[in-house]
Structures are given as structure tokens and as C-alpha cells.
Amino acid sequence: MRASVGLVVLVAACGGEVHSVGLFGTGTVSASAGSSTDDEASASASAATSSAGSGASVDTSSGASSGAEPIFDVGSGGDEASGTEYCAQVDILFVIDNSPSMGGYQEQLAFAFPTFVDQMWAALPVGTDLHVGITTTSFFSGSCAETVMNCATTATDAEVLAHYVTPDQGSTGVNGEQGRLYAWEDQSFFAAIVGDDPWPLKVWFSEAAVSAGEVGCSFEMMTAGAAYPFHPANAGANADFVRDDDAVLVIFVLTDEPDKSPEDLSTYVDLVTAAKADCGGAECVVVAGLVETCITGVDDRLWGFLNAWPDPPHFGDINDAAGYDDVIGAALAQAIGTKCDEIRPEG
Image (cartoon, rainbow, N blue to C red; front, side):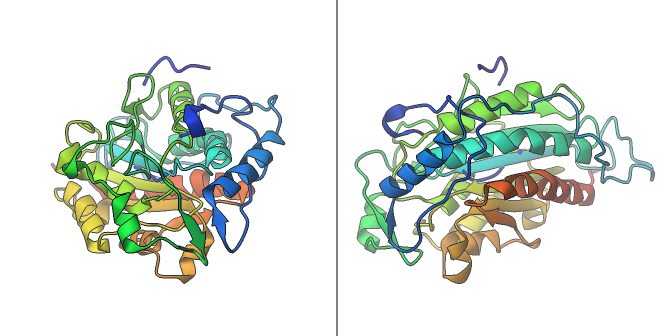
């Protein structure tokens, strides 16, 4: 299946392999507790995905889910068709872990995404302008080997820093790395209008999410991946993706590991906030994710990032395949709609 045409959230295949068989499988994915390596988790995820078979299909029909009610109050002077009185734009960034353990999880995300689109079509006024993009958690191109114990890396600070090259230090030249948007079908992000046929968006994202694959470094930098798309060094690669005033910025992270982003949390929060300065900064940001839930009980950089914003994060367990639709679909779409209702265009 190929997309014919090309919002902000967090989520490639080993040896460059692209997952296509069983892309919309429904098998559950689990990871072992305690000490693990990316290779071990990859075997578990791949086995779970294979059990789904290749005959499953996904509902990518146009229009919103049947019975869904828009959450906007458009009866107080707002023009639903034009988007006036409400934010006119939503930019959604998916930060997708692309290390060698993520193939099955990426497929689960691809399977759930059409439901999310349907919920968005139900939650937002017709005419809302959407940008949907993907970046990865890798900031290093080369040999990577890293182990996690008790929800923390066993690597030294020096080893982490040796696998962390920010874009201002030079480009690795890898698609979707160092905060650059992942280009798929010659598009670095997908632009869509609520009310139009959602099929092309569903196809583009579902293919792009799995084509990112598992070729990324196992030193996963989730928070850096969420922030560096807005660094000046990526202005050219990510041009026109994020809109500042009158636009909601959504960041969604997909990962099965604790974060290794080495800089202070404030560095990452400041990069995102600066990108929304004309809109109101942090007030215009929605964060969400499907994560390894052990990070909630430790001093993990990603957990700090998810909780650094005025509104609480919408998150779930990445290993709970049955919960993907709830987190990515209804909960996130409603959060976006509620936030969009708070941001009124000037004039």
C-alpha cells in the first residue's frame, strides 16, 4: 500500500527492513521485566506481532467514528466551517522510538492511528488545518549497544554523551534523526484539513510509522527528540511544520525504554516553549505518550518532560495493546479539542 499524498507526538527496522506484512496486526506486545537489551525486546515484539498474521485489515474509512459527538461549543458565535473563534491550526509531532525493539509497537501505533484520525474529525471544527509529522529518538549513527537495569541505563554518562550528537554539532545525515522530521513519500510532514477525506493521512502516517523501523541507536533520546525539532539547526529541514500563534502543538511519544536524554530538562522545555511564544508558550502545548510505565516511579527525563506542562499528560502502557485506541484515539483527540477551544485567533 502506498500513499499518494504527503500535529506533534513521540515514537525504523534493523538492517533497514521495512515492516509491511501484518502491518495492521492485532497481536499483543510485551517486554521482559528487570534487565533487558534491545535485541531481546525486539525478539519478543517481533514474535508477538507475527502471531497476528498477515490477513488483518484496518478501518481507514473516511469520516468520523459513528456516534461521536464534536466537543466544541460552536453555538456562541463561532463559525465551524472557517474555524473562527477557535484555534485554526493543530500541529502534531509523533516522537517514535526507532531502536531495535520497536517494530511490533510501531505496527500497533499504525493500527490505532486511523481511529485517532476519526476522533479528530469528530472533535475539531470542519476546516481545522492539521500538520502531522514524525521524528525519532536517535541522535547517533553508528554502533550502539546499551542495556537497561531497573528502569535506568547501565551506561556511564560519558558513554551516553558519546552517542548524543545534537544537530548544531553536525548532521548525521540520517532521515528522521537529531530532531529532523522523518520524510516519507517525499513529504516531511502531512498537511490535512478536517472535513476532507482522511484516507490519505491515515495511509501516509501508518506507512511512515513502521518505515522508521529499528535502525536507530539504542541510546534512545525521547525528550531530546521532542525538543530538537524546534532547534534553529533544524529550521531548514522542518520548515513550515509548526505554526506559532493560534495553533495547538501536540507532542506524542512512543517508547519502550527509559530516556537517556542527557541535557537539563529546562533545555528541552525551553526549546518547545520558544516555538510557541506568540501563542502563549506552554499553555499551547499538549503532551501524551505510550511509554514503559516504570518511568513513573523514577527520576526519568521523559517523565519529567511529560509533567512539565500546565495540563497533565495523557499516557498509557506501551505493552497494553488493548489500550492504544483509548490513549491515541478518544483521550488525545478530546485533549486536543479542549486545548484548541482555549486558544482563540486574534482579531
